[in-house]
Length: 275
Length: 306
Image (cartoon, rainbow over all chains, first blue to last red; front, top):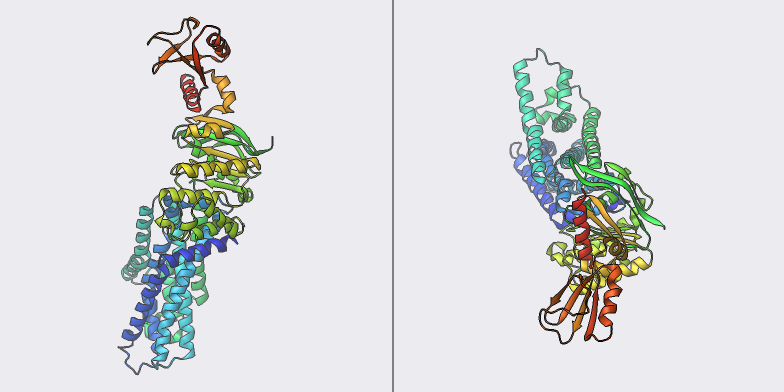
């Protein structure tokens, strides 16, 4: 009950602050432009236009969704403490974990709304413009939207963990940007460099799998680019898809753990905070 | 006494700094208690301890049957709190804010919204809190603290930023709640205001409780002189009346008023002398030591006995 009240207020505020509007507009504009520009290389004969869209959209998601998620979440706890609203809220009959979880559900709802609407719009545009859409493409597309929301949940949870541990908003913002750079850009580059240096001598396939699961954005990428045979042919990942031994279930589990563990740690850190 | 808040031997350290040291007191239902002290004397720390916002280094606290440090909060449904420098989410309107807090306390929103009218925010209820002035935020802070007829009210500097008229209504509301059995703990700098309203005063200094009791009790302990002001006719400037007992500390105030500092047990003696036959007394005023003076006295004493 308390969780629902707090989630409701968080959504209400996000609508008021135009966070919902901004996120939805941004995601729909990018999704729509990718849909129509992205179909240029395949031309009108692109019989599997939606699969191409999945490849380009999921690559975009890896950059954008973590950024939006961290933007709304890094400030959630430390910001309310600095503004002084947290002191008052915690004087009410609510537990701290309820505050945290309520905020999480609220922020996730905002993100899910923006993603579903923005990406859904792209798919709808494709269908209305006369492209043929196979049912397996549709499945892969729905899975892409779902996993994008899950990726958002991961970064909202990570943002909360940062927010629950630091003492001012500036630090929270700095650490969040650092984490975003690390997980979205640097990790993959470093991994690539490592593999190139190693030439397959020491790093086994299972070690590579472990390293991919240690980064939620890689788990997301593998899920969308190799999880569905129809998509992986376009992603240029067909070869990798055969050799990768990570199942869809393992990837989803990794993403779920990447949400639950930071969220749990954030709850722990928040419960020990003194205001 | 039916204690709603009990604090025993509570100590709170922030690193090496002691914010509160070995404080104990019990507050009963229906009491209005003023918590006074300088900034940094530990008033806000005590309130935060009662709310479980911070945990005590030592000692134990019970608020409406809960141990706040252990995260128990069922009693908080019957607790109202107004923090110092209260703030709200700027994006929501006054009405939405009040409704949100009422829902958290499981109280009907309609009754909570009536409180907005009571504090004079009725007209601004539809505006965003971000557009409110400091005084209006303070009013909203009061309105949320009063949701659901609380049994304990913790008010940290409640009257700062309130205009005199609203102060009056504020104290009326407090008085009404207290007579219904609410425990009201308020900290304030406006000591003259509290003098008439607080049944009990707790004075804090550097985290230590230096005095606790009704104003009468504190006056008796402090043994500060009552000032007797006499208006005497036919007195030359600078001259003191002849009937004044020798050694009585006295002085002349603007023109023809004589002021005598009377220790509690000599009060009657001085009055008898003044009203004895033959004096040209026109008027008498008795000024008992004010809360301001008592406060200063206890602080001085606390400084002397480290």
